[in-house]
Image 1: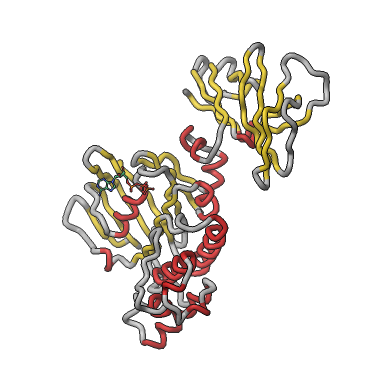
Image 2: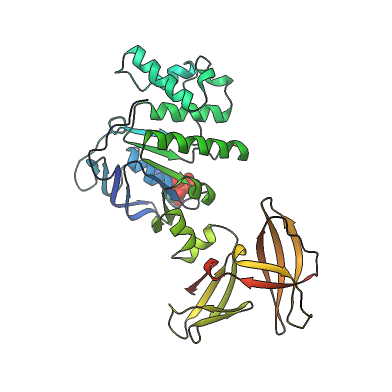
Length: 360
Ligand code: ATP
């Protein structure tokens, strides 16, 4: 398979100062975002935050009211003048949630559809090579209706990639697939994109998908980018409570910063970055709690188990933590199979690296 179109220099995609309002909804509010050559950037956020709208601006399916779009350093649109390149001239590969294939064309011809300038022989070679990379070689002569949803989505991916686009724009391409198939197709897709060195913007609302697929994640909320960074930066150093909550279940405690700490039912937590007297919120991931069956004598301040359940690779434990006369319910995740009985007394240790303190 030939190499993708070389990006002249700089970013594969650059969105500069993009703003857009639909009636009362701000879909984009001064967005600045770039995708580097060969990079996979995930736009991650809840439904309605503006992810698809940004992707449509990049593809040229919609015109932003303000800002500029560049692809491979070429200006594609500028809202301040009449610069506008239509979608078919942008050299982007598009894949949406539902694969839309031509029903009257074979799988091979579907993939070769975007290669009119190649000779028939070159077109067939490139299409077959891409189909082989996606494990679809045996289906080259089949028609789309005999393929499963996952296979159709792979054909759509191969078709978008065939003309060596400057950037792939993928909008929730895996969300219509069942969980096991989805994992497999994510893996295959990532492998294919990396092997071809294709810059990609992937839109998803699924944090696990973003962690798995992305070189870099941009977390969006209400038309704004809340934080950008590598998956490790976003997960381990979240800059906003929204980012912590978006990645899953979290225990929340409130308190006032006193002597650089906030008191929690599990002991004091460092809050040195906040001013004394600040009302603080402490967000504790379930995996920050390490639970042990209690070895020492029982006392009035012990914690106990309310329920435990197996999640698969980890166990979920619903805890009751006592502090004076107060009770706090918390969730813990422990690796492997750890299923203490209801009412069992336990000790809890808190891992500060999975505990985040913000001003309330
Ligand atoms: P989802 O994951 O549900 O697709 P999203 O993050 O991709 O959500 P968008 O589809 O970009 O969000 O929509 C952002 C906001 O803009 C939403 O409130 C949506 O209702 C609104 N919106 C999008 N397109 C239009 C349109 N053509 N006319 C009016 N409002 C629109």
